[in-house]
Length: 174
Image (tube, rainbow, N blue to C red; front, top):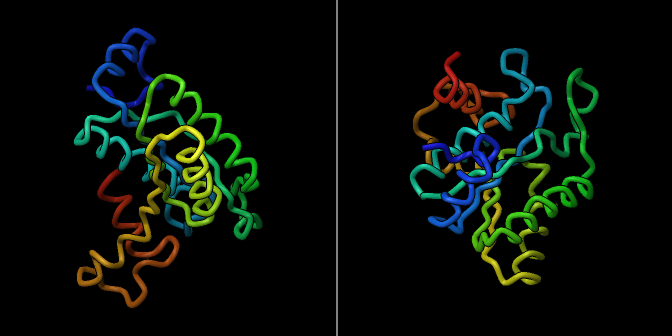
């Protein structure tokens, strides 16, 4: 069953909305990710993990931005930079749209460290303003504590390192 709202008709959305009040919103970036991984690694992982979680949790996946706060890597070709205040403003608009449609639980599945502060702030603001339950989960940051015994390299969790390569190969072998 489709979980991504962007692929639904308005009638399919209305039907699915009757069964859930939980929305997952992917967040990532388009930036350099080593010489071997695609520029969209972060957002590709966020989207795939969001869909896998939504299928298990009975949630829906919102449309999302395919850019992030990537200023530190802006010197690399292909990196797209979005200011933190712009990122927060657009994600606010996305969240408020779905709050309008009755979603009571919003989760941002974030795979880009530099998006964390503006999105964490947004989630707290929305909880206070609308009384909905909100959270932002920094997905990559959980990996070290649950995977430390499976890597071969000395620093497996760095940007574009063994962990990211392994995750990409698993989720998108192509």
